[in-house]
Length: 406
Image (cartoon, rainbow, N blue to C red; front, side, top):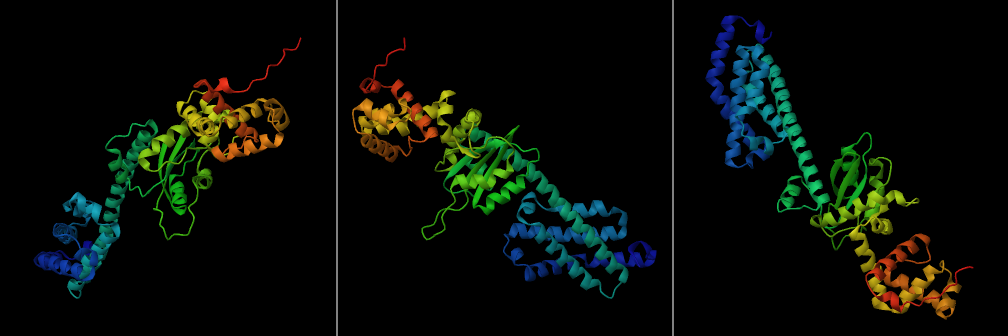
């Protein structure tokens, strides 16, 4: 027998009885919550009171629905209207369902033996309330998701443009950023079907956190280590290059450029500028790997007018060599000018080829680049040119006059 088929006299009597005991039901429900749900007992008094209002509203709403079952969708949703907004943020959907279950159990125990019709109505109504709760939380999650997406796009844009302000740390914290320490920026193309959730799952498995920004055909990831390094942790951290390789399937076809590693998220703008500059010129290197580090594109970036690339080449290559020994600079100049020939370099400098070989080894030890490789030779020659343009060091460079063919 259902609520709609109850005789009018019986229904009126049941309604009157339910209204009389509604206060007792609310009190018994609060006690049940206190006894059975640890999270409720640990809540501050204001929020406990708000939960009590929700329970009371649920019981009152059931009585109203029992009187008029056609009002189910509206009254069930109204139960949660009495809850302050902060309560919806602090109480999870699982806890809300536990609240509904406790309320239904108390009401069901109280009406047992009174009427099968009321018991069936409680079960039906509790289902409607559960769906209403799910709808409330789904809408809140959707609104939160849209807000988070807009905030994340704003944060990524601030990092890319270098226009970080005092509010950036608070915005990052609002996004739930778990990064600690080193950060690098990754720039690639947006795939036709971007799966943001898969990118985040992959990042979590790799022990990093990500901020994702989509700018038309360009996909930007700000990658940061999610856990701080511990002194007793013997597990080596994955380098960002390897992390990038694992994230690479989430990008579209085309070049994928990794900016240099920076100490913290507030410095991510430096990595972003390098990654963006590298992405803009990556097509100029025919054999560019995927992914490619922005610092491996320093010659192309410098030729395109990137001041950061020019500064990096001079400070990391030319100045250390010039400070260490002018012999290293002159040997490197000659070696590169002579097509990387040891014999030709030795003849120009009037030294033994083994001396040239030793000096080139010292060059590699000082700056970390090996001049014997074609790609690194281009990087080193570009650095020498840029360094010489800004100094008078080329005046001390040995020169060999060559006759012009007649």
